[in-house]
Length: 273
Length: 273
Image (cartoon, rainbow over all chains, first blue to last red; front, side):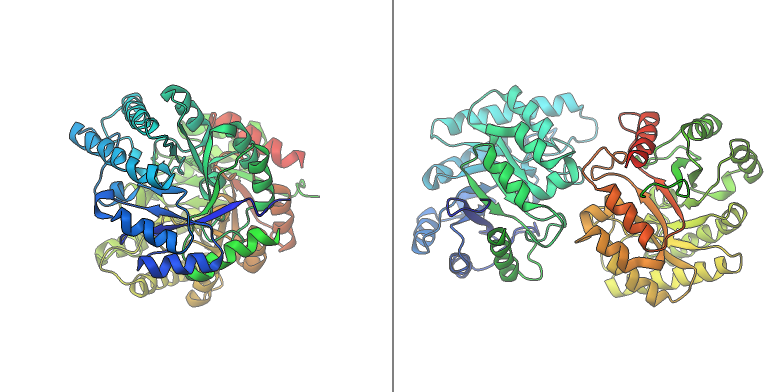
């Protein structure tokens, strides 16, 4: 049994205008939450650039109104739109990135969400050694994870393909990073689109990651909804289940041919297997 | 039978220091040609930035000495290192790109090579409409193809994944471009690494391209040698054969763990099927 009623499905939603085109739903929050719930999703993954720009009470009321959970909070817009990064040569920028992630902790604690560390980890800038960048990254992740730990919150770093970052592209690098950070509430978010490019064998890497899988993104090989490309989601979800994963499966894909159609087809494809 | 003695295998070699990291062999020309021949390759695909910097007689003598053919000439370094492009807003740059490609024709005619149009097609620059860029691209391709036609030479444009160019990412766009250019000696170079990201179903796209496949690159899903990732080369090469393709299969992959090992493993993987 691949797709079971126990598999909790969510989809990425941006709460603010975002440049990141793989955020599937953009626009008016309530309209989108209503659509997402009506399509059969159990939750929304929120891409939040800055928590202080979001009314938590309003958000809580809205997601509650539509019976949705918030399994994870995406933070990459702070990199894309403000340039915040754990590995910037400027210590003020690194500090701002750490404080920004810490500011997500009360949100995550309230919604019992995982905090995603995506592009905010930064890239290795010219003149900076890989070792230096890794040390900054590890220090930042440890500080944020320890702060999150006090609220029972977890952080998940997403290995992202080589074209989008130079730091942590694959699961092997991610698992090594986890060992170096050395705190229990820090793990990985695996994304099938990135794994298709970076992993030698997707299912093997998932098994290697095992209990460190904190969150899971589905997008097909071309970043369309599952079923829009050539990935074998039956095998992938069976493998996910075999690791003991009890978390969410969250759709982060291009809104093609449009957001509603893509969201419908994602659910249909995962059901039909 | 997937791999047959009739399948002609080549590998990419740069004749000048190049930044493009997927050029598998870089360095001293004769040493590399000797290595390539000794590994069992039938040909070398030459990445040439500027033909006027290469001694054709020396090159001809060298490849002949090692019994190698030159099935294709890569031209992307003129973009990577000089910024030449068919779609630059500056008409002087566009003209220089066209003249550079035309200057490859005598080389291609001498070696009976295909001229590859890769990154030199350019990207859609800010302020330029997609339609304008496409029109410049079509005009340039038509002019170059018509010039090449007089020497019995063919041009092949490579669909390249979304992260490296904004113009012609997939086979469907390539086939539409072929129809608009409308000359018989212009076709496509298909690359398995790019197809893994961009094609809904790789084999279907290959069949759609059919007789327009002029050249074929192999690299695995992670741009390692075939066998280093998760692509099904048995199915891919069977499909290639089914289209009636009688050209070369050329390895363009990262030199990992090193160039020689990668080149050996490519041949071994294609043989073992």
